[in-house]
Length: 232
Image (cartoon, rainbow, N blue to C red; front, side, top):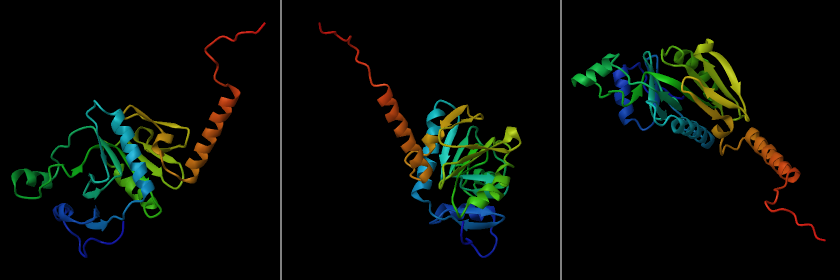
C-alpha cells in the first residue's frame, strides 16, 4: 500500500463508487483508501499457479476461485486478496447491498466484493510482509467462514498456513511437501505453486531433482523388452 486516496475519511459507499472508476486499485481501511502498488512477475506467477491449482481441483463443486481484482469485505474494511475461494453465496448484510437493490444507492450486489471466503491467499513482498503477517491476518481471522489463511513467500520457497481448526496456529511447507487444504478437500504440491518461479530455492530444488533423476537412470538403465540371445 502507498498513498492515501483522499485527505479526509470517506464513506464505504464513496469508496465502492470510486473503485468503479479508479485508475488504480485501493484498499479501504478505517475509513481511508490506500493505493496498491503494482505486482512483480514472480508475484503474478505465484498467484496464478495457486489459483489454477485450486480452481482445477474444485471443478464440479459450488466453490469459486477469485484472483487479484475481487475484493473481500471484513467488517467495514475492504481488501484485494491475491487469491480467494468462496463456497457459498453472500447474503444481504449491509446498507450498501440493500441500497443497491432498492435503487437508492451504490450499485453493488456482491459482483465487486465477497464476504464469505473459506480460504484467502496473500503473496508476501518486502513492502507488505509485516502488514500481511500481522494486522491483515488478525482482521481476516474475524471472518466467520474463513478456515485457512495462506502466506506465500516470493523470495524464498516457504508457505505458511494458518488454520482456524488449530486455533490459527501456523504450519510451514517447503519444496517437496504437499499441502492439504482440509476445508476444501484439496491437496497441492508446493513445487506446483512455485512452477516457473526462479528464486534461489526453486533453482536449487530443480537442480537436485534433475541430478537425482539422472543418477537413477544411470543406476537402473531401461531394460530391453526382448530376451537376450546367447551366441554359440
